[in-house]
Image (cartoon, rainbow, N blue to C red; front, side, top):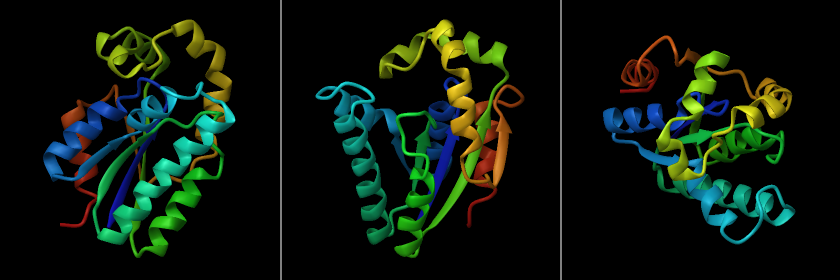
Length: 175
């Protein structure tokens, strides 16, 4: 089992690249907003119940995938409502099930990031769309990103297309 753990700041292209990578590799795509939206339908974002259930769901999916040998791509935006040690606990869980985790960091320059926030497809998953909110939370996001495990690869998503990024990531994967 191989968990491709794509992470980056808002509007760094996580879902777009994950879709291209899934199409190229046939791996399952587990987009973090699927869980965020499901749990957020019942509990307010960031509440104790929300954070607990979101993390439990993520970890349960990883554990079952490791148990059954099902590799997958996971998209993740490090932010303050997620426990700082979540990525390392996810890695330990997968590795205990004899799986492997590859962390891939996606970056984007601030001007491109703000431009992307306005793209209409972001609304489909209730993603952040406000440049003002992004600026307000910039230091929090930066601290959360700095606490992430060292990535096997860092991709500037403004420097290559999603297909090129997916090809670059796929080249790291075992045949």
